[in-house]
Image 1: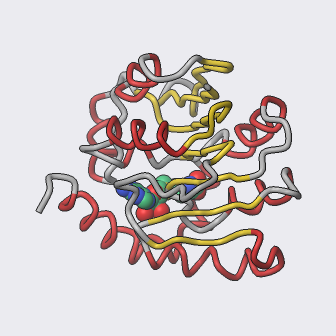
Image 2: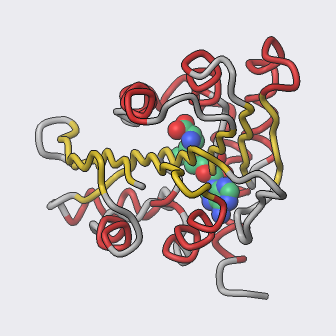
Image 3: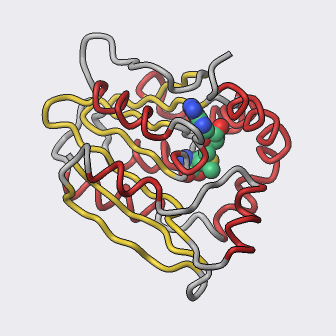
Length: 206
Ligand SMILES: C[S@@+](CC[C@H](N)C(=O)[O-])C[C@H]1O[C@@H](n2cnc3c(N)ncnc32)[C@H](O)[C@@H]1O
């Protein structure tokens, strides 16, 4: 068993229950998701293929389908419970929006690569392995491909970081340094959540 598997196993069980309350609760703290997609739309001209890694219950897939009406979109997630919540929201887009149930452990582009890859609050949960996932993402991106990320960045409060750790989130500013070595930033902003309880990252790069 590789060292990423225990993390995947505990995330799968975490979301078995959390999938039921996800859409009711996450609007209150997963900030910047809509903004990310609209910013991406201002940077990426007519993407043909879009991938969201860790698409969860499909909120962003709906937003992407609306913003990019000509694109083929895939949402990938390791939790079947989360994907079950996403599926009904996507029916109206037919075969244009598809779902894949798997962990992101290897490139998935067969033939045509992706023009836009989105990570929304997923990288901070991939511990260990978020750096490897960024390498895989680079392989899945087309030559002019763009990566768009919104995620928890850091908190100066120990107790809050510990609490988020209980919820499988690592927020020690670990992702940004790995982005710097792999992509050229087009947008790189750090925003505040609830005063200065935490900071979150909004990043678009190529
Ligand atoms: C906080 S949720 C975010 C869901 C959605 N992107 C959103 O913004 O609402 C994180 C999602 O990432 C998924 N995930 C975590 N690690 C993953 C991995 N290695 N491969 C695929 N999905 C993963 C989880 O199952 C979960 O659905």
